[in-house]
Length: 300
Image 1 (cartoon, rainbow, N blue to C red):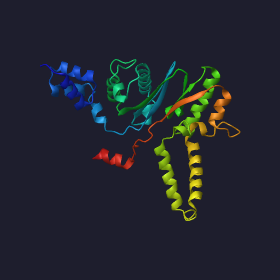
Image 2: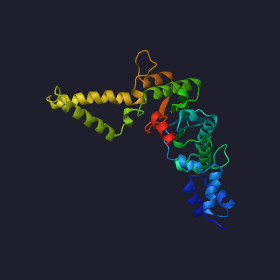
Image 3: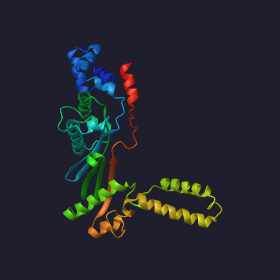
Image 4: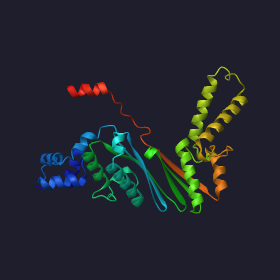
């Protein structure tokens, strides 16, 4: 019995398996959808669909530098144990290489690409790894920086935090040491912006409104003149923006409390362009283990 591309798509949606696996299953079963599902189950591939709803908030951030291209990628797993598995780590490394080589628009576009070092697409390889390793896994995000200057990476705590930093500069040892120090600063203090000039107006307005409300609700300040309130707000905003802007932060390794901007300038003709910072699982719902509930579920 013949089958169509729509049949392959339907089988993929039913099972969560890769496109090539679904095509093979339909070929082996003469296009019989039910038999194709059984075929995938027998091969241990359809189990991936059952795992898709599980919370994957552990995992790793991996970096990859290829000349003038730098990549950060976050791939999540259900447990920290799997995140240390060599097969999982190899998969993440190949995902990063695929991003570097192809510059996909987003994660869905990435999944459709042939995997560097693999036999199928990134999506197919992901599905196969879920079935083999036995946990849900998810390619959450990536960042790719291609530069005419220098890009360096820094990985903290074996993949808990990853950072890329790009600068316009000559590519030499002094520059790379400087940028690595800046990357460590980004990892430690988590700035939101490169400089205060990059802060969006809506963010500034939002923070200003919060400070106004705080002062209005503080009996010590509520009745102060408007010009005094305005100066207080300006002072507090300046302090806050200094904390969230990389170039204006106090450089953590400095003994004289100089800013990151002054530290970079002291090294040479280096202009920081951008940075990216990923922290594994940030913003994701965490799985809460309850041993009593787990035991109860096992004896039902």
